[in-house]
Length: 379
Image (cartoon, rainbow, N blue to C red):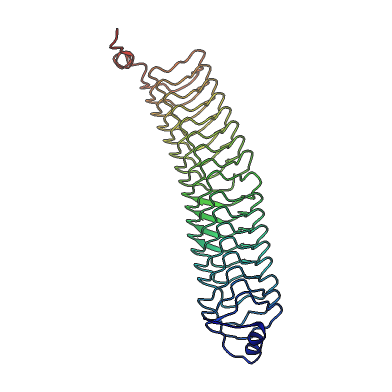
């Protein structure tokens, strides 16, 4: 690669000559209008290109790492597979550009405009995207590890297999975005804007969404295990087959939620409200459900083995073939509930209300099974 000085570079640009394969690394070319200069295979590593006009350049296999593009007009053709690691691009307009496969690791993209951009398989690990606009952007297989996306606008974006591990996510906007197999493990999303957002098979284990209103969202097959969801509102949300195992959900509201086959194993759901929800075949083994409300809830074939349901309300709930084996049902209210064929083996029911409940074919404690379960070979 031929090294070139600033004066020669400016002469060639002014004359419309090619700079393909030349080394312009470290040069200060601020404010330069590059016209349609061919920069194929050139190096601009560490170059200063503030307020430069690069909109018409030909660019491919060009090294742009650590360059300063503040205020520059970027190539209209996009920057696919570009090497832009550690580049400075604050406020730059990259809207609609193709950045497929580009290396933007540790780049400064504060308040950059990436609206509608394509960032498939791009590496934005450690990048600063604070306040950037990615509304309607497309991200597939994109890395955002340890990135700063505080206040970043992802509204309407399409994200698939995107990794936000250890990213800073305060105030990010996910309204109307579609996320599939996106990793947001342990993220603090309490200040995020989440409305009419679609999450499918997303990793949300350990996230903090306490007190958030997610009523207009879908979380099909997503993993909330161990998440902080205290007083979170999922009313009317679509939660089919989502996993809430071990989640902290005291006072959460899932009124009329579509939550068939969801798992809440060992979750803390004290005082949670499920009124009118579809929880058919849901799994609540070992869950803490004291004072929870299941009024008019569909709990057909639900599994409550070993759950604590002290003081829970099941008025007019549908519970055919539900399994309450070894559950604590003390002071619970099953008034007018349908418990056809339900399993109450070893369930405690001190003070439980059964007024008007359908208890046909209910399975009470099985003496032989009880003896087997409590058998002690040492005696």
